[in-house]
Each structure stands twice: as C-alpha cells, then as structure tokens.
Image (cartoon, rainbow, N blue to C red; front, side, top):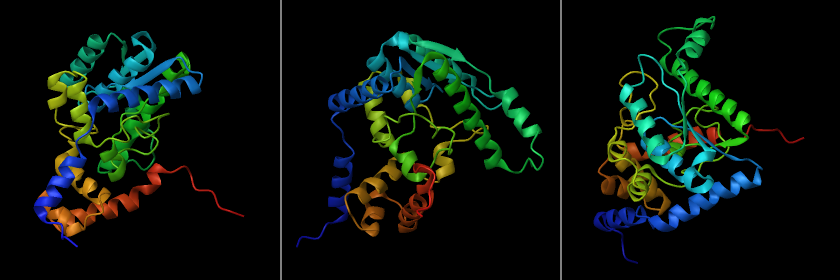
Length: 273
C-alpha cells in the first residue's frame, strides 16, 4: 500500500477545493428557485453587509428569482460598522438592480443592552451576539411583509467551525453557500463578477470595531479550509497539519470545535418517551 506523503496530501487537498464553477452556479440557482417555489413565496430577502458571502448570495438570488423579487437589507451599527461596507452593499445592490434598504440597528441594540439587568460591558461575546439576532428579526419582518424567504449567507467553513450566532445569522430559511468553503465562495464570486474590492475585503462579522473572522478564529480561511478538506478526504491529522502549514494542535482544535458546536446545526433536541 502506497503511503500518502505531505506533497501528495497538499495536492489532493488543493484539488478537492477546486470546483466546477458553471455547474455550481446552476445548482445553487436551481436550489434557491426550488425552495422559493416550494414555500409558495415570491422572492428572497438577504442581509447585505457589503461582504463576500452576502454579495454572492444576492447575486444568486437575483438569478433565481429576478431582481425585482430580491431585497438586500444592510443593517449597520453606529461606531462599529465601517461606512465603506455600507457603500459596498449599496454598490452591489445597484449593480444587481435589486431592491435595497438600510436599517440602523443601533437603537434596538442599545435598548436591549440597557434593559438587561446583569449586562456587563466586559461581556463582549454575549453582548455582540445580540446584534445578529436583531438583524435576524429585521430580515424576517421584511420576509413576512413581502412573502419572501430569508436566504442565509453562512458558508461551510463557518458552519463547521460553528462560527455564527445561533438564532442570529444562523436563523434563516435556506443556506445556499452551506456546501461551499470560504475559499470556494471566493472562486464563485470571481466567476459571478462580484465587485473586486468586495472579493478582496477582509472578512468580518462586524460584531465590534476592528473585529475580523481570521483574528477571532486564530487561523486564515485558506488554512482552515485545507484542514476541513483534508478531514473530508480521510487524511490523518498530522498529514493535514503538514499540508496546511499548521500545528497538529490546530487540526485537533477544529476537530473538537466542530464537535462542540454541532448543536448550532440541529433543531432543538426532543426526548424520546
């Protein structure tokens, strides 16, 4: 039996992350179109942050439902959201010709924080997670108003790492990018002619000023995707670590993280009687 070398593993992983872009586009557009039709809905509502994932989703929704049936909602927070992101979201919507709204979440977030009995300034993550949940509420308001589905923007990298807010950005009707790793979404974005500066933006959930995905995860998406792709291929953790250029502790950390975060991907548990 031939032993897989680090060089072989690197090639296998990188090859597995390459996708057939026209075929993927067709499948995702058909998926969105089918889910909207099955629900008896008239269109799609997308949280349009000005980032890579939401811009790709908005583009796919336009192809699936038509520009007049897609609403992009940008939901900035004063002092946290970079004004450039709002401008990018506006430019993406203009390029696509879809409907667009800007809703400032600052008053709602402050109102919740100020009314929490045990709210502490130091509680950064619990306080930050209020924001995606406020955004989810706004998206569903528009979805109800327009008889539309909320189309999520989480990708497979985020889903496996549990890097999203439960009942926040994870609270959607469908996730067309849930089958694609972040680096694959970037490939698809270029294929779909998403604005170049949007593709090149530093990924951020916009939870606090200066926050970035890769800083919070402690790893780049390129390396994270190589870890997950290596696991998909059934490679050993030490071989994956060498191929991705990370420590074996990093591989094991994300294996364990995926196990711990699995509850985020499941419906509420119900006991059997």
